[in-house]
Each structure stands twice: as structure tokens, then as C-alpha cells.
Image (cartoon, rainbow, N blue to C red; front, side, top):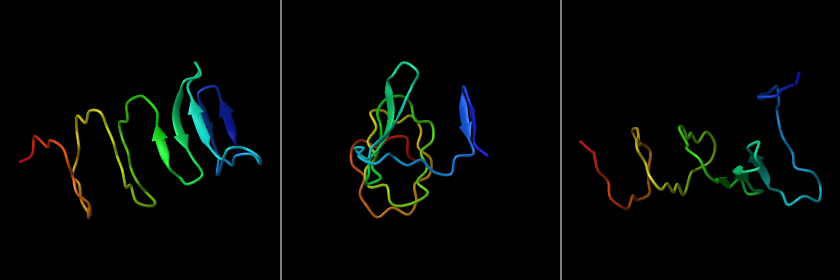
Length: 90
């Protein structure tokens, strides 16, 4: 059963863009500001705001760009390279 409340939606199994659309799903705040965008290839763009948790459950995250990272937990299973300043390591 789908339940739509002013602050939440539950019971949704899938969301499909309409035919003839640009195959982009966007989520906006109540003032119209776009916060999240997913295109037809699955590319996800977090437009603005603070990401407190990012978990990849399917596929491979090939690029993650952040202006400031304040906390990064253990990184495992990587085959790529890291660049830029890395500090706070033990």
C-alpha cells in the first residue's frame, strides 16, 4: 500500500519517468531548489547540500567529488588511485 504524507512517501517499489520525458528524475525541496538528479544512465548528481551518508549498493562508484570531506571511514576494495592531499591518517 502506498502512503503519501506531507513529509514522507512510503510503500513505493519503483518510480518511472513518463514517455517522452528527458529520462531525468529530479528531487526538489519545497522552494523549488533541485537537490538530487538521476539520469537515464544511472548517473547521480547531488546538486547541493550536505551528504551525511553515501552507500553504493549496486554498481561501481567511479567518481566522487567533494569540496570538503570532514570524515571518511575505512576504504576497502579499491583498485583506483587517490589524488590530492590526504591528512589525518595513522
